[in-house]
Length: 359
Image 1 (cartoon, rainbow, N blue to C red):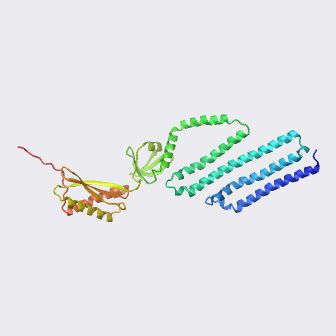
Image 2: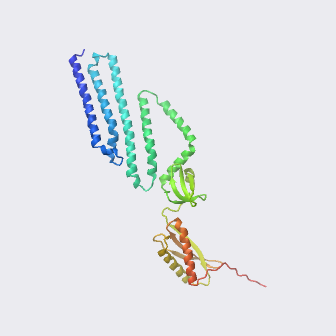
Image 3: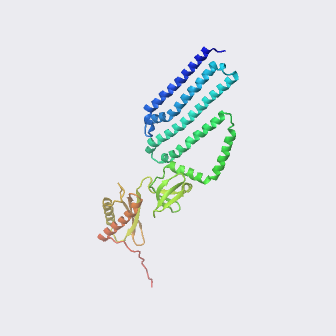
């Protein structure tokens, strides 16, 4: 039988144990409010954010752990004065189980919060430096999905800890997952196609594209389910990503925005071809200096292509700075060549036919 002095000693030791845990919790709380206070701001340093979001659960864990282990300590040293042996064993099991459950909950909460902080940090510091906006579109959904996944795994772990069979749960989730996947097969197809479009980085907002089948316009946004295009008539066209993934898409803004222009025409057979070439080059070089639609560092090219029915045909090559500019530049090229041909008496023949009468 334990004496009163031994019981008092056990009580004092348990109180000391609880006091140490409480003191550790207080010190941690002070650190959170001083060293990690800046972590309240999402733009603060990563380690301060992690310290701030995990500090609260750790403080609660330390306080409750001190209480649990203090009670357990008293029960171990002096429990037989008030409890039977079977009651002592039951209390020990309850206390130890409570502490393990708290430890699991602490791990789950901290893991979810740290994951959220890391994703926030990546979105602010890393994603903006990448060449594509894939990160900007992927991280926000992950911030919603990953914490749910962590809490779900934690809940399953707790059920397993308490002896519940998780096999039926996993089986049910598997069957339910298959049923859901079949029910949302088309949205899932669009989702994975959207993932492909985003990861490849071939399309960006404000790119001018043309899709097989005749749809053309500026990319307004690339989402998980669909790609939105603003067509030439300023209408919004929504295209499912599954169709985008299966179609041939021409991006007029990749790898660069400059658009090649080739214009064909011809001059009469009687004309001096050297003179024609000189006049065309002078016209194009003048246009480079004056037109706002010409691409930077473009070099005009010219060449004769064939003997036509009425003219000796030639081609002109230049680069417009982008797709809309190509229409204006083409018009300016035609106007300036026509003007300088008239000025230099260079003739572009109408289609003619020579008729031979044998009679």
